[in-house]
Image (cartoon, rainbow, N blue to C red; front, side, top):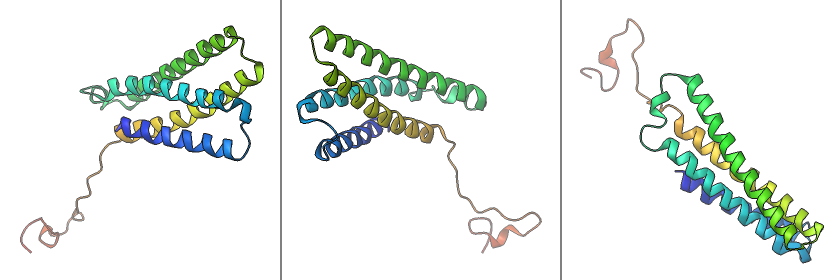
Length: 158
């Protein structure tokens, strides 16, 4: 489920980057740093998906099934942890690029691409996470109060 979210997020990120490069929004000289920003955002998203997966595996979400406020607080904590991972990746990468003597324009291209790609991945995984913990709805015909259940399919003789 989250692997699918990561795959969809990656496809959306690279499609958006390709469109931005094709339209000329990404300078040709800085395109490699833009691609590096997209890849770094996907690496950070992989770590975020791993955090989300630890919560969803086994009994993670089931512990909070009876308390919606506790579940919401835990999900907000997961999203905050994912944000912290992405911020850490961004800061380390920017410092590494500056240590290598990369020009400011290229670092800015990396950072802006990282931010956009990270946002796309965050929205994708958050939507899949919300969908995963949503209660399952079972559509079962229910007889109206005081009516005869014999007329409802599956409820008595027809």
